[in-house]
Image 1 (cartoon, rainbow, N blue to C red):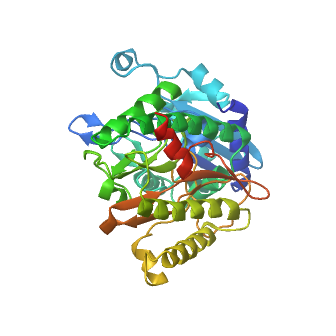
Image 2 (image 1 turned 60 degrees about the vertical axis):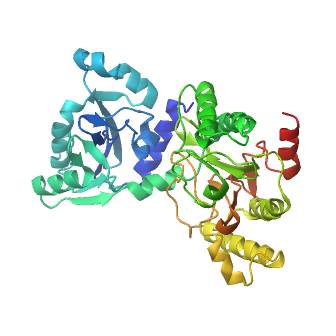
Length: 421
């Protein structure tokens, strides 16, 4: 669990990136329509959550910086007994303050007045504010029928001459380097994922439906995490479907000679585990499966050893392409190195955090505290063989720690697991 003092420190770090005489308005978000009168389950804006720890729709964070003085306000929904009968309990002002460490917790009905007074200078002796920060992430819905771009345009219409800047990149840059508390959340999510994978592997057998295996994973991780859910939609593929990167419909029956590819993860406090494992349905790899699997495994290990501060994700991708091309050429799986693009067609790594694919550039050097994926793969559709092995790496001062090292991936360990069932 992240303590309120860490949220306070995060906001302080963001204040240091803001101009003097400026004002930031950040929204938690609002549910999006699914169909008719149904909405999708609410998912909090991760930048807002990173700064407050508040997981509730219709909340707003106001950061006010004038002549070096910093003020912060959290606005939440007013108590509505009728709504609570339908939708459950909402945070009280006291609870929101305890979670976020923000003293000034108010009702969101005061938002317009607060923004108006801040921009016009009613809160200080220094005159009006001319710089306003918004999180302009695309498709950021902030209220019923209102997106962040709508709000930006309304501010420009009402307050002529203000400069609106996007604070998204500043928050993302803070999110990339994880604290010890965040790493602890990752470890919890990964442990739940490990146990879920072991339970799923135990159910894999010829004749089973793919979704039966996915359901077993979901059941176990929700029991362990207190129903925090999956980090992303589970991919559970067998046979030829293992060659589809984001196979969406796990309804097929697992065949005796199939490989089964699992790409899945639990989450803890929204911190995501992202793991892929590939196993034989009958408990034993055949010779061709073993050859392809070992190439991918060796590549996975090579990337874990290579990753360190100063390298970029693009550098890791180049190493991956060269390794896979050379190994496949040597084993006679391809005729030229250029052919590798037909059998390996995705990136080897991305940042992981409050989002499974946390924002972060492929071209910016890695630094200690980053958490990234390590996921080489090979996909031979004509052979009905797809293999992906994915670990989560914590970049350290001198290299990388494999956070997911306890999850089986060696051929002998996998086959031993099935022989002992």
